Amino acid sequence: MFKKEKCTTFLRNLLKKAKVGDIHSALLAYRATSLQSGFSPAELLMGRKLRTTVPITTEGLTPDWSYSRTFQQKDAALRRSNTRNFNQCHRTKELPPLQPNTYVWIGNDRDGIVESRSEQPRSYNVRTPSGCVRRNRRHLIPVPDPAVDAGQSDYYHTRSGRLVRPPDRLNL
Image (cartoon, rainbow, N blue to C red):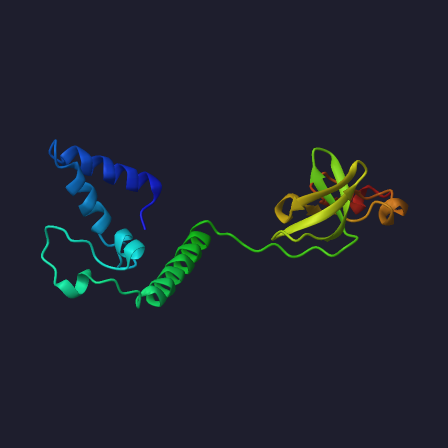
């Protein structure tokens, strides 16, 4: 399938090349052109090929919806392929899930505790001092609970959650 930018550029160039009174035949050719799935937009809409300047048998002009299952399978395979290629190029990775009662840093010097998983994908309900909020997993950085670390005065955590320990050589 065409991306929106490519599609509009292609259509704009097609209309520029069309003669003054021949815009409708240019649009007809555009709508009858096959996509990556092998079917044209008009064929998907009407269940048959359009009558264009290219000769076609009368059997091709009768509506037939037998290809709908084939189209759905090809379209699903194309979407999976596009998703896989995008994820490979952009090195995406799935973040590990968070357990309830996990202490997290949200950002802007805000922290909270994960209450539960939200109905939305990759989202969690987080209890903060100002109330309960829903946040996406990539905005939540798990940090150790400050109540547990209260006895360890030597160690502290940065805003990103990294544990900082002073070196042993300074313990004289």
